[in-house]
Amino acid sequence: MKSKEFVGFEELTKQELWTLCMAEYDNANPLVKYLINNFYTNLEQIIEKTGDCKSYFEIGCGAGESSRRIHKMLSKNKSFEASDFDKRYVELLNEKEMPFPVSQQSIYEIQKADNAYDCVICLEVMEHLEYPEKAVKELFRVASKSVIISVPNEPIWRILNMTRLKYLKDFGNTPGHINHFSSNSLKKLTEPYSKTVLTVKPTPWVILHATKK
Image (tube, rainbow, N blue to C red; front, side, top):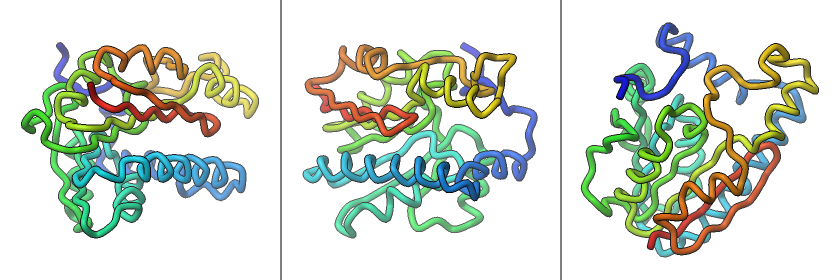
């Protein structure tokens, strides 16, 4: 296995990577803002369905915007931790003194015990991974009750990119996306470990909530 966690962006500096990750959140386009807010509205509704969970862990937090929003969604009697493989993100988030622990973790080898957290969350990571099957197995190992995963909903994601004349030579594929999931293919990826699966599709994403077998 290659040492890198996912394909793309290895050459960027810490600040360049941060700026790239935050660009979508800083976008002033009203439609972009609506789509992102709708995504998090749907995510919050899913998290509400994990009401009996007490501990939450996000892996692949990137610049931490999702982590900040998730942390605000949780009541004060629930614990939350975040992590990322890229030490550039981890350093930046710890410099910013986030209100929750942030650690460096590989999604392929999470340095946590089996069933360490009630709910494990992984947003916008699977599309970047060379070994998504290995990653999903590890997510369910660390979770005791629930796993929440989101990915771009394909082919809708690429179609929307092309309608705005982005990445045309790559048929709308966003740089760094080496996997392409639909709700059905994402569900199939988690089925070996899931008891029940719920998917919602806030355009242009899929969010999956699986309860562990």
